Length: 86
Image 1 (spheres, rainbow, N blue to C red):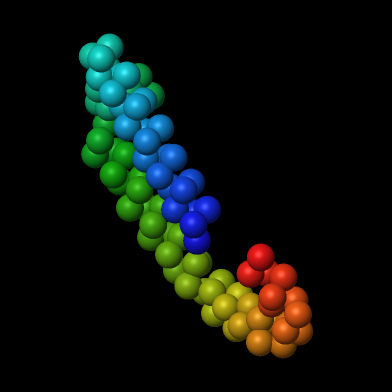
Image 2 (cartoon, one colour):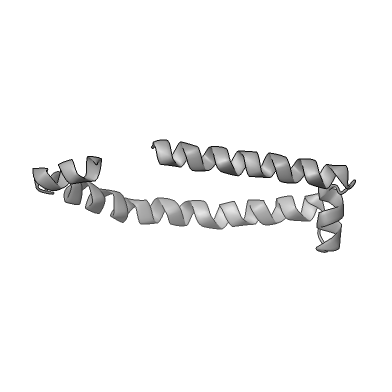
């Protein structure tokens, strides 16, 4: 969990530094989207369509993956669990 938080912090700091550098050059997110041929509204529509497609598939897959993972974890020999903690 600590590695995950450290990676998340690194991503946040890199994003902050990049955003600061771009703002120094007077580059905005709207300009970047315009260069890509997008608008914030179109991007929002794409994100909504993506979530409408992905969320049901994630839920469907988790109905199989989570029980299999739980059974694997429960029946894993105890010495293997100790190695995972290290």
